[in-house]
Length: 269
Image (cartoon, rainbow, N blue to C red; front, top):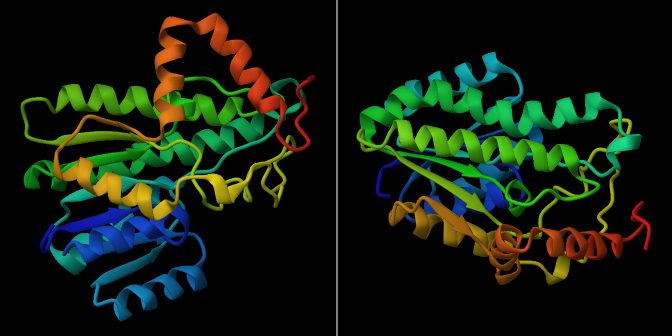
């Protein structure tokens, strides 16, 4: 990672912030994006204090032009781009029957099209560097989750996009990693969208019992160095993917019952 340039979308909190420190401490130079300048600057100051060269960039991944501007800013500053980590994401919490379809569109714009836009503009430089495109997906991209239909749809789309890209780049030396954490302690559930697009501002799960963002970042760094195709984290996550492939009917019931136990779940128990 020495002197590699890593661009992380959604890098001002949670897994994105942890990735900035993890890759930075390994020797990389870090560019990272977010929508709030104050949060970006705080993380930038912390990175600088840790001796990590960095470039904070205010941007919304759902806006195509923002992604082009970000990539050009990275090239202007560092002259190269080796690794893109598509981390920016948002979730939702509502039964599909109750949800405004625009909520699903917003989730798709950030989680899927944000990945598409950033990858589109970064890919020429990553091809030149024979570097990596990384997508922070989810177990929800392998197994549809009730009350999170839009989130699951966006992650299924991300997984398919990355798999297709990996195959296209098979003989070009470009590494494509789909990283799928299980439930991870972060702020994504606090910013979940409700049925009408309002930010819920609360989590329905015990954040203290989850894998830490720092552990996720460490595992992603290792997978990047090893140029792995897929990284599925947590025993629960691996078991979910396995059982959903071989016993999908059983998994329908298990997933339903598990998510029906969440705080204020709209699922019938």
